[in-house]
Image (cartoon, rainbow over all chains, first blue to last red; front, top):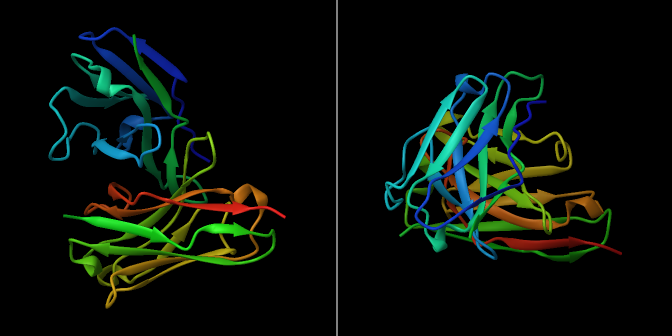
Length: 110
Length: 121
């Protein structure tokens, strides 16, 4: 089955740029979506189809996807961005197609 | 305003069954696919399955870990999606989220608050 690999944690100072990666075999050929989950809350979609933002999501959140790595970039990081972030794709390549989530990355704002 | 409210969670013994409901409002329910995603305590997100809209046949897809045990259905007249869980195992213990899909079935733009299912003897 398809595997998405995320770093367990990323730390960044306020005002700096955080980059969270999501690795997968030829992930650049898939549409990648990103979710933010704060403690005790449901996930929120922050980027979809590699780089589009839902309404209400700040422009500070952006995404890219190429080759074997997709990246969620958060510019001018704020304390309120501290959360777990998950990447997600639809894998139709295996003998059992399905939605796949990465393991999640905990973003810590120093 | 889109709202998804899950209900039906609780404590259940291994091998027993449980049915979760997801009551939707704020959008034309029948036009969208609906999915279930779960999260075991302290763990990451795991997709359970989805049901397409009637326009796309109302067909379902499931994760390998639940296929044959779980069934997703929908009642468009009531704006409710269901997750019937049979032959429950301790590893099914999780918060179960109902999600609404964007135009693409596997992008989840709205999530409910989740309902906790605990499988234990």
